[in-house]
Structures are given as structure tokens and as C-alpha cells.
Length: 106
Image 1 (cartoon, rainbow, N blue to C red):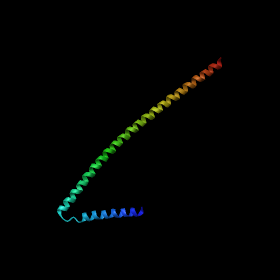
Image 2 (tube, rainbow, N blue to C red):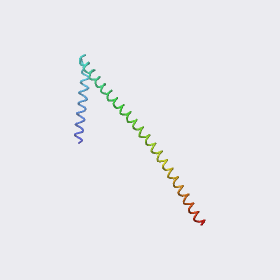
Image 3 (cartoon, one colour):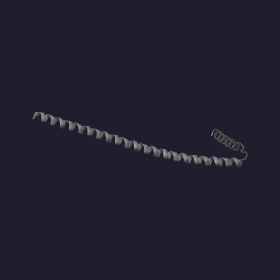
Image 4 (cartoon, one colour):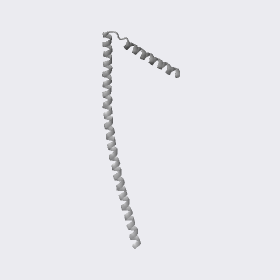
């Protein structure tokens, strides 16, 4: 696998060298126009990808915000339920104490 990785790296380096040589060997206006046309196409593609990614980011941020809001609402609801439960326990304890006190009076 080390040999494969080494060969892959050599291929990448060779491709990069060929691409660099191709750009360095531009000698005519026609070649320059073709190169410029290619670069502008790449720029447009990059801008479109950037726009899509930005849109996805904004959607993700909105989703995250919605989830955080729902989480806070659920936490508040749980806190309310816990307070109600504690109140019910207190009422039950008071009723029990009253029964105990009432039984001891008899």
C-alpha cells in the first residue's frame, strides 16, 4: 500500500507539472483567450458552489435555531411539570400529616 500511495503521489505531481507547463507555455493570444475562458468557467462554477453552500449553511443555521427554540420550550415545560409534581407531593404530604394528626386526636 505504501508503493501504491507513492505511485499515486507521483501521478498527482506529474499532472500538476503538466498543468503548470501548459499554463506556462501559453504563447499566443488565442491560447490566452482559451485559458481565460477556462478560468472564467471555473470561477462561475466556484461561485455557484459557494452560493449553494451559503444557502445550505443558512438553512442549517435556521434549523439549528428552531431546534434550540424547541429545546428551550421543552426544558421550560419540564420545569413546569417538575414544579407541579413537587407541589402535588407537598399537598400529599400535608394531607397525610393532617390524617396523622387527626388520627392522633381521636
